[in-house]
Image 1 (cartoon, chains in turn brown, blue):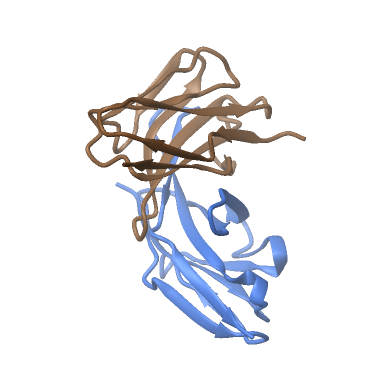
Image 2 (tube, helix red, strand yellow):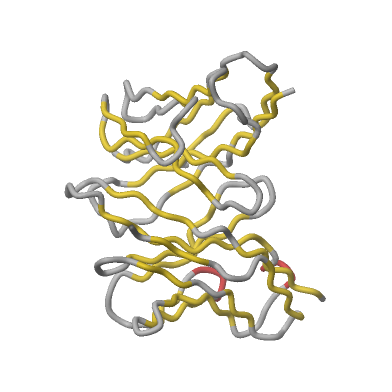
Length: 114
Length: 117
């Protein structure tokens, strides 16, 4: 079945360590997004990518990095520069060219910094 | 800048009663509005959207939403609530970023819907 796969589902990190969250989609979508979810704050956009080899900062990009070397993959690295990385991270995709289209979400990755 | 507000953190409804989850928005042009649902520790699932046309939009699981341009609202409704409707609901508005293929969705803070048996 087509969809978005995020891994790992749960991740624990020590302070000062970088971690990478995986996001893979087989929907043939051009656009991919990373959101951070904190209780009571909704979803905040970290990075987005409209096409391969191109990505843009969202509202809270500091302390994060991404790459888009393949259409189906959009990994997110949470660096040690991120001050408060404990959160639920959601990856999404959309066809990209149709701005009326909805987002398709993965199941999320919960990161906890110890 | 575009924004979306969900004024209620929580809505409590008895099973079988009608439910409404409120959403208001602010945009500079025509809005593209969406509702999503999230179950615990899961991703968001699309429920319905308003792009143009009929102000009453029907979606998944018996939900519908009414677009009201004069009140800049897009409230989510269901005639008869089920316990299984208990979840976190997000309203969202899509913003165009200036070039044809670029856009991002802005989400509200979410409303927790609790349906009691």
